[in-house]
Figure 1 (cartoon, rainbow, N blue to C red):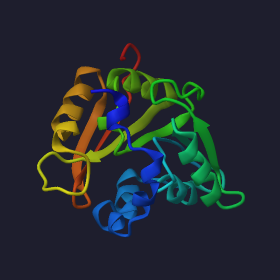
Figure 2 (cartoon, rainbow, N blue to C red; figure 1 turned 30 degrees about the vertical axis):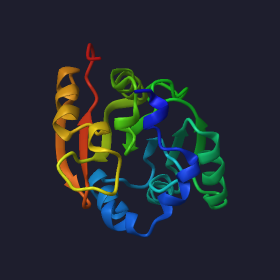
Figure 3 (tube, rainbow, N blue to C red; figure 1 turned 90 degrees about the horizontal axis):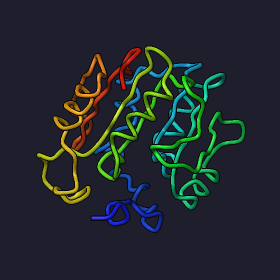
Figure 4 (cartoon, one colour; figure 1 turned 135 degrees about the vertical axis):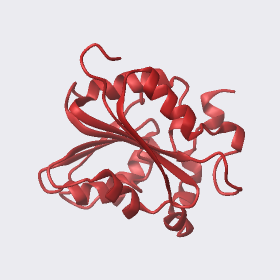
Length: 198
């Protein structure tokens, strides 16, 4: 199956505004779990139309910054329209495995409902580790495999929480924690591998 088939297309961007989404993926609950605060520098991989990037920008303002990374220029164009004047959001058209951002520059690398779409998760983890400063954190929100549908992608396209944890452990990430979030998702957080890690 190609990446193209799994990818959430910009033609469906209106679905990202469904009020129900706030019930099954509560932004506040996620941001609280991540402990975001003023001055933090965050990358949102697959930022889409800014569902998380915009509230994150409010949480880290005024001195922090959110890099909203997305492969689809149409998503970023929509996000640009929604971004308030002066909000600390920088739009980056790039791939999860090649973000073009500076090494050691991020406090947090975040992705929501993107992990199951990635063709090369190891490459994305390598890039996340490169971006994070020492002690920085990775946070992955994605769809649980043990819930009814809809919403969300077909169950066979999903990547379970346990697989994410195993992959992180296998690549030397530490302080791995996972929890359910909202009605249909999970949140896995981990600290980047130390020297010699991948």
